[in-house]
Image (cartoon, rainbow, N blue to C red; front, side, top):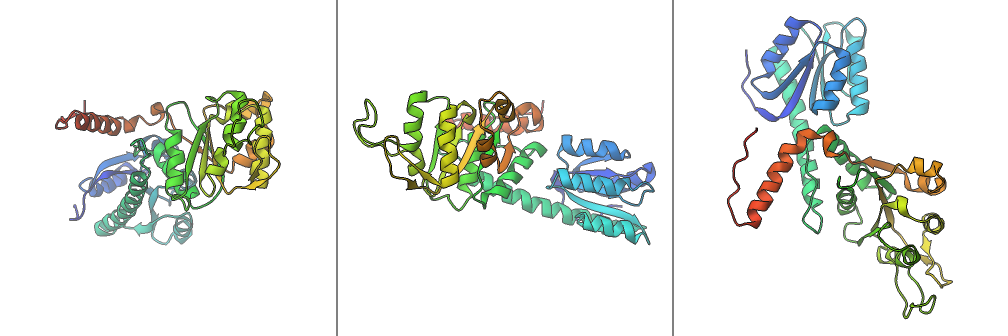
Length: 354
């Protein structure tokens, strides 16, 4: 019953069909071509499967009496924009077929199904996914940081990160990157910069929690000679150095309130004033603020300014912890194995699934 063609070994297809025999027929056509076939007859559970398993192509019956298939398409499209869908409708059910197309389905097929039509539609969706993956992989390679590190992952959680990077890279919007310590917030910030129109301009970073409070203002905004004890010469601040580029303010939640006021003025006026100086110096800088803290809680504690938060929070990117993307562990294990083998001048040993 199979159809000859490309085998999409790296993609996952979810078949959602309440009728067990129809579901098995659909899976029988697709199994020779897609190694990862998931199936369910429960429309409510399907959304959880999509979120947990990183589904690439959704095959769903939209002609059920309660319109559960149409609702699944709507929710899946809203929450997982990387997903490609192939809808199936009963012949003559033009209403649900049109709804499926309007909701972004790649194709809508009519029953009775021809094997070649189903295979061709899902193959086409698979090719579109592979094109997107290739683009994202290119972005990831371009986003190798100066220290040689890069983001690794094909999980649904990481795909959402890559999609947010793709969304924001062409804009000049300020960004907040949230995530626990060690999740790779700096890599996300560098990927945004490296793939933006500012890529040839400076990428400047500062950990707001690692600089003494009395020196942080000088680091950010610069100072004039003699403006304070020890200011033996003029200093250009990081905002001036990052002109036309990007500045990463890591651990923004640790910035003292008095400096938050000055930062707010820079964001609003697009100009800095050096410590001890009177001249306002125009700067064109995209700000990426990173934090492991819940800034909304910090606002409630009066340790972070609400007005600054909303100036920075044009776009938010959540970087998942490893426990949120366990399916990326084999990729990471292979990456580190290859890296350490290269460093020791050895052939990369095989890593079995177990």
